[in-house]
Length: 170
Image 1 (cartoon, rainbow, N blue to C red):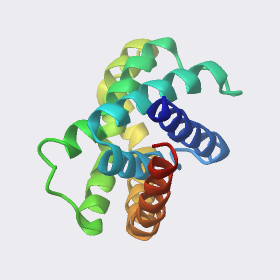
Image 2 (tube, rainbow, N blue to C red):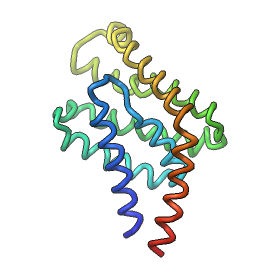
Image 3 (cartoon, one colour):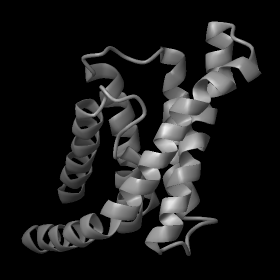
Image 4 (cartoon, one colour):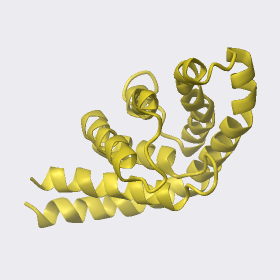
């Protein structure tokens, strides 16, 4: 039961920060938080947090849900973080490597949406790609800087709080 509460709390943090920062296109701390969650909680719990986040964001967002066809893209995009960080990039622990990962993830996340977006909008692939590049670049830069500046202090705080939480609920 305590782990369910933890998953709900972390998913709520994701939802609130994404909603609070949604007035700035492609700017949020979602990538940073999912990297931290993956490093602290592992693949399974982070994946549950992502599923809850995507569902809640699409149901409760005051801006309305994304196009229903985009929900699988959003889910796949965010799930790439725990998948990559628990498999081929498992050894990446330094903040600099994680910041570089965050930079490239800004583009990768945008590219996951391209097939559905091209299908729904009827926009040619290359035209859509070039129109989306500035938004992907914003996400890449904010991911890089957010991870570089905030990963270590947030990780330190969350490690301590997670330890206290687990001690208090034993």
